Image (tube, rainbow, N blue to C red; front, side):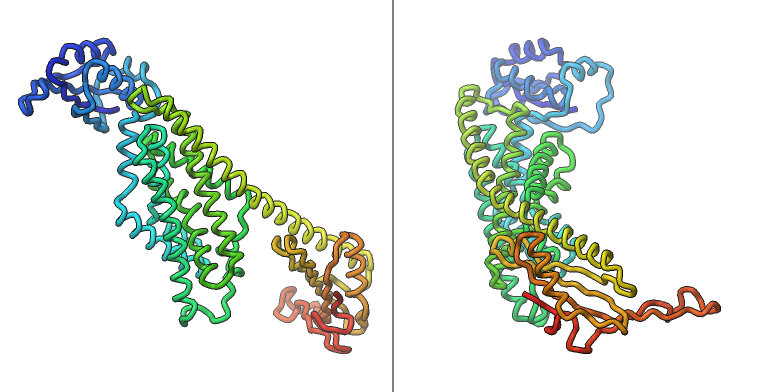
Length: 463
C-alpha cells in the first residue's frame, strides 16, 4: 500500500477532490498555510498499481508538474474500506514516478560508482588468481553495476535522455575501467612473490570458465537483466539481484585485464567478448520488460518518440548480440565436438583392451589433450593411454602406431597417440590377513625395460 500526499494548486481544489471522489478514494484534506501557490494538501492510501492511474487523473484535474507529490510506502494499513480499491487495482507494479525515483537512487554519484567498481574488480581479480568462487561472489556484492543498467532502460521508456545516456556511459566506461584495473593488478602481481613465476592463468578453472563463453552465458545475462528489472518493478531483492548482474560482468572484465597483463591476447579477447555479450543482453532484457509492463512518459505527446527510440535501441542491441552470438555458437559447437571426441576415444580404447582379452592387461587411464581452440586452429588431438601389463609380458613395440592408424581411420582426422606401460603387481592375500590391509592393494611400477615408459620413444609414441 502507498500513502500519497499532494499539494493542490490554487483554484484546483474542487476538480482534484471530484477526481478522487470519482475514483472512490477516501482522503484527508488539510489547509495549506505555507507557500501561497497552494491552497490545500490532500493525502490518501492507494495500492501500488493504482498510484499511476490516480496521478494521471489528478494531472488532468490541475495538479501540475511543479506541484509537490510525495508517495510513501506504508508498513500497515488497518481498514476495512480499502478492499474495493485493492480489487480495482490488483498487482504489484509500481508507478512510473516510483520507477523513475528508484532508477535515480540506483545510479550513484560517479565517484562512488567508480570507487566501488574498482574495489570489486580488485577483489574479483584476486579471487580469479586464487581460484576462489567465494571470493568472486563476495566481490559481486560490492559491484554497483545494476544501477546503470536499470537507469539506462528506465530513461529510454520514460523519455529521459539524460538518464539513459548516463546509464549507458557508466556501464561502458565502468567496464573499461574494470578491464584496466585487472590489467594493472596483473602487472603488479606478476613480478611479485605472491604468484609463482611460471603461473599459467589459463589452467586456473575460474579463469578458464570466463575464456570459453557459450550460449549458456547468454541465458545468464538475459535472466539477470529480467530479474533486475522485475525486482525494481516489484520493490524486492534488488541488492541480491545486483549480485547476479555483477557476476555476469565483473569477473569476465577482470579476466580480460589479466589476459592483457599476462600477454595472452586470446584470453583477453574471449573474456571481452563475454563482457560485451552479457552487457547487451542485460540491457535488452531489462528494456523489453519495462516497455512490456506499460511504463510510458507522463507527456502523451512523447509516446511516438519513445516508441521509435525503443525500437531503434532494441534493433541495435539485438544486432550486436546476433553478431557476437556467432562467436558463442562457434565456442559452443567446438566445445561439444571436442567433448564428444574425447568420450568416443575413451569408449573406443576401453573396448579395444576388453576385446584383446589378455590376462593381466588392463586399461589404467585415457586422456585426450584437445581444446576448442585446437579444433579452430586445426591442431591434432593428442591421445594419452596408460596400460597396465604383467611383469612377464613384453610390451608391443608398435602399439602406439597401430592405435594411431586405427583412430585416424575411424575418426577421419590425424591424431597423436602416446602409450605408456606400467607393471601391475597384485599381492596374494593370506586367509588370515585383513581384506583391506595397507599392502593388499595393487601396486604399479613404470616399465623402463627396452626404453618403454609413458611417452617413451621405442613403441611409446607416434605422430
